[in-house]
Amino acid sequence: QACFHHAKQFLRIDVVCVMLCSLENYYWRYTSASELVNMILAFVETRAHQLFQMPDFVQLSESMVQMIMCRNLEIPEVRKFEAMLGWAKHKIRTKTSSKLDAKLEFKVTMERLSRDL
Image 1 (cartoon, rainbow, N blue to C red):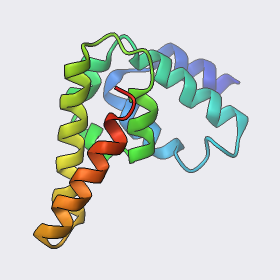
Image 2 (cartoon, one colour):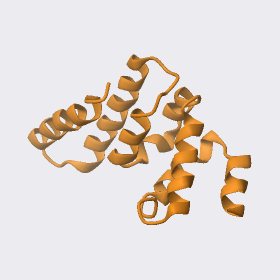
Image 3 (spheres, rainbow, N blue to C red):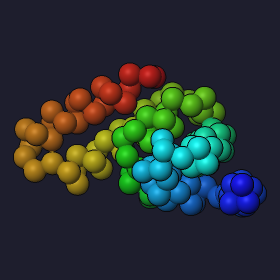
């Protein structure tokens, strides 16, 4: 609880992505980690524009990006789409080998991400 309270008091947008990446393997297993993820997601609702500008945003997993996009973000839908697009392009550039694989992977990734828009 002390850790949660400290994180809530001193949370900054520039550490959000690193924290979410670190919590990814634990949030479904531990209540305290889940509470911390939910607190971070609530924090970014009013700071989505800043979050999407962070270089570490593209390092988030697809499930974390989906969790963020499903929130009631105070940002126009077009900005959410642009963030998804940038994230997906980075994923394809760093994860796929062939051009055909890249096109298909990009298409299905964007379909999954934009489902909730």
